[in-house]
Image (tube, rainbow, N blue to C red; front, side, top):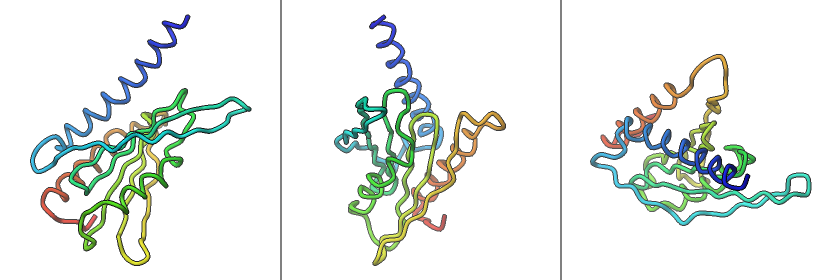
Length: 162
């Protein structure tokens, strides 16, 4: 039984990372002028019916212009909204110029949410509607890919009007 649970968890993580990696590749984030780096993971804890649940936020950074947070948690216990504060903190602390917005994306593998921050005084931010792969009416992957492609094009060309 333990081996099956381990394999299932591994498969969930692999599918999540493969889908995200494929989206980023098609959108052009693995090509010049982008460099990818990773921040140290952040551990998140929560209680669910007196049972401890532990998760982890993995943050990928593309040229300090796009911050992507991947939520790793048992059974998708953490929503994309739980990672917004940490992602905004990384975006705000990024070393890039203050004359254009910084973008972010949060995903738990089933849901995707986009963030935009202007480093004004005080900082201003907004987030998109959540795109869910579990929505039976439509497949939002095309919309998510379209947003990532627009961000890739605009960031690589230095146009930040989105």
